[in-house]
Image 1 (cartoon, one colour):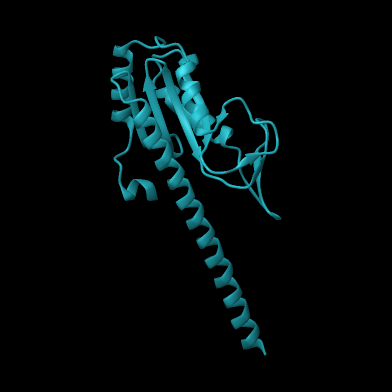
Image 2 (image 1 turned 45 degrees about the horizontal axis):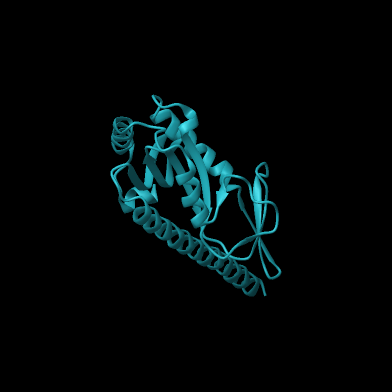
Length: 200
């Protein structure tokens, strides 16, 4: 009887671990799908010398490192972009610590991406400390079929809205020299793109 209970507990633990691993794997695939879509969109729309798109930027922070999906450096400013690829209904506001995704009757909570991107933006501001802070913009873009059931915060966009927002900024917010210097500073600060960097 005791052996049966032990075996049952072991299989239950394995089942939970496997379920968690599969869920994490699916979430990772969704995120990479969304990031790939935005990377192509940015590269296609902003393909002149005034714009530089940096993708999958891993930068050092005091407690380790942080990974930023995209940074667009341009004469219109610096755009720190967090990408989310979600479906279902989204509930959340600017101040909530967690947002909720609802698909049919299943609810999942996830970190408020605005809070997540705030840290990213502060890292960029520290590296580009020679720029005015108001030219560095924190934006979140949802690439999936998700529908907001609460009011969408100002800096949260769908892909086409993101492009419109970038193009709505003053075209001479930064000089071309400052753009080039900013790109150089970020490229020097970033960790090498590799599987080991992603793992760490």
